[in-house]
Length: 225
Image (cartoon, rainbow, N blue to C red; front, side):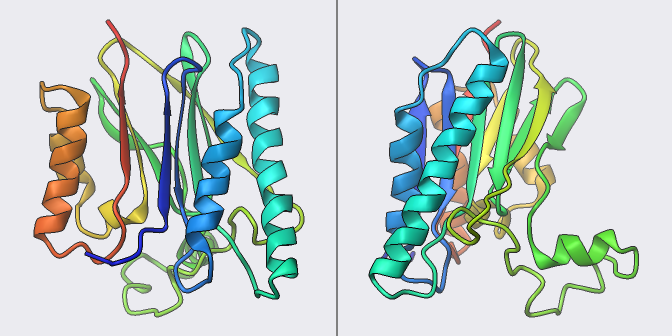
């Protein structure tokens, strides 16, 4: 419902690489940041060696990080940043990389699992054991990001390795989805026996019907049988 979209996405089946980037709200040029992430990742070429593939993805995100910091300095902006979540097919398993609170989910025979951990104040506060999710519901700063591409000179990308069985479904999404839908609702949508584009459309349509408080971007990937 917003007039300006700061999200971007990559769907590159040839290189078995997918991504979602969410330009940071409240900062200038968020769309420039998310588009830069997609542009750099589009140049990544898949290699048979998973370690080399990881290095290429990390190098791309590191290059964007430096580019955005330079852009902010050149235009005298406080910060130009974006979240990023990446899914890379490494053959018999999947690799996920992220910075920020855009998420990666996997729906398998065992149900839905969030593979990423949000890099925000709420998660850091909960990790101390002194706060619960309920404690932070009314905290205005709980959703503030503590990590993003373009936010710090030294970007730390977090990685996760996931099994990938036939017919598993992976979802990359910006927080526009998770602001409107619960994990249980997402699981139902991902489990629909339809084409992945139809699953994506249904997720977006549900959020639009609920008011769409933020930009919504999804990429749905199903493992071939």
